[in-house]
Image 1 (spheres, rainbow over the protein chains, first blue to last red):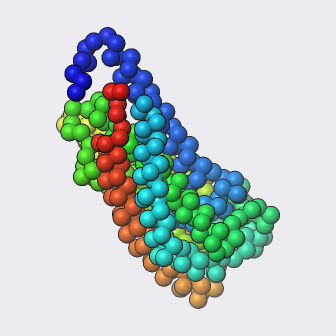
Image 2: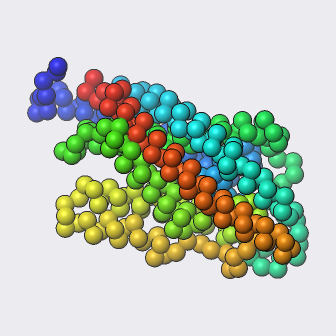
Length: 60
Length: 249
């Protein structure tokens, strides 16, 4: 098992980059949710119509 | 690689829970949608007559005949289940990312499948209970509602403030916790955009009677389905973050 070494200088940028990766993943999730659940284009609406209703997203 | 692990885990969790909800929807929710669509009136009629609502169609989304849509039957069911899975993946990305951030930064206990189920319930508060049950109720097709863009904006505001509110309630020191409740309450104090007259686009009394009953059924089944979906989503996300999301590698 790796020893916890939070105070060493080289562990700091690693933690930062993990946080950035987490934020990147959150942004991707938001984009996916928008595309499926909220995008106004007719094609996106029609394809996901029943799912939008079933998740009670605002529709029509 | 946190990003890759989060994404791969979320895809697997989203497929499981989205597929389950898709099947639930196929048997319990879609039949209600199809039944309500029988009473849908053509969009041109209310636009031409314009007795109320819709404010001359400004910013209102019109369905036009030429736009592509899946054929009724297998194609439509397939797209619906696919969309359920995609939404499941999106919600799971949110949960697993935030769980990973929690495990990385918080002094509170690390997430397990059991506490993950509680995260799932919090996720349901954010995405269903607050915006839908307390605001814009689940609706069958053919229900009169306020302008779509306003409802979407309120939905987003409500979900965001509920999420921030829950986070403040959970993480902030005791003296700030009241702020979390105020944040979550704010969108409901502002109030969800509602149509001037609540009702259905179809003026026929028999249709209104039928649609009212369908709305009640729809409300019940979406609430039950959402509860199952979010608890499973949370528990699986908790399991995934415990097993597969390595933050210190």
